[in-house]
Length: 401
Image 1 (cartoon, rainbow, N blue to C red):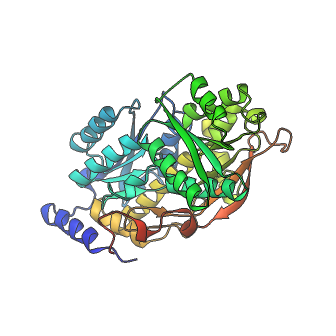
Image 2 (cartoon, one colour):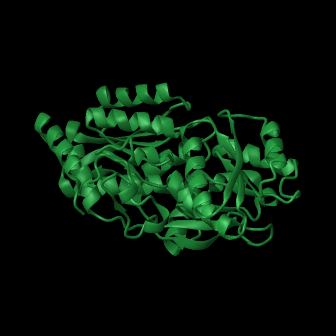
């Protein structure tokens, strides 16, 4: 794969200002920044850190003959905390790569700091397409999913089933805005209509007024453009208000396995959603997932599995190049495909988007599976080129037009 001129020029600039090293400080240090106590703690949290740690363990604990160290922190769902941690890790602790499971605003801040300081960053838990568009970085990678892929998979499937009138209940921050915008575009492009929308505050606990507005809107589909406990709380309350019983269809635009465990099949059955990973998809996904469950107690979410894959690909780059220099390793990662349980023939584009198959899934009915962990079924694969934004549409300055 060829890198765009802007990408190469920026990397050459960094190389000219700092001599490439072998392994800095004789240690490859990875920082995992996650939500350990808030709305995203179940789908990322300590399980995301475990994904990174398992990747290091499976690599043998050493790369290019040097020790690998994983440090982690709870960013408390605050952009200022995430930014301060990123700077401290880089300036004080000598972190070589930061991988995150944070909200999109924090991920953008982390990526910009990595760009400023010449440190690689991998977004595994955040969703905004801004990471590979206006906010793209030569050293930034968006690995697991994004709002465009979620909108394309779930939005198109529901509209094509004949449900064309939509109402959005949206989290009022960068991720929610991006997810609503991307999904609305898909709906309208397919001939559908956006009846209305309402935005709720982050970490809301009472969704009654938002749900009542959706019920009186006359929309066929009530779409939740939120995530984590925001989504599970909203969906539980929608069930209590009888949204489905009154004839409307509920769409979860970002659904994690842990959400489904929390909701239960009685509430979530029939929900169609898009995911970047499902544990019971293949022998390889089952093998990793069962090892993960033995350590964590639950099957991995797409974030937790994706972090394992991303850290492994990064370590493969360090091993192959013999250095933890960010420019050198990022170039290798973009030139070499990813083939593991998470991605087959995955590759990283010049805008930083990791291209891999996504999946359209549906929540099972109670009693449909004998395995309590097997709460969904994959309806179809969504090829990477269909799932993610075409490179020609990217606003990333690194993309050659």
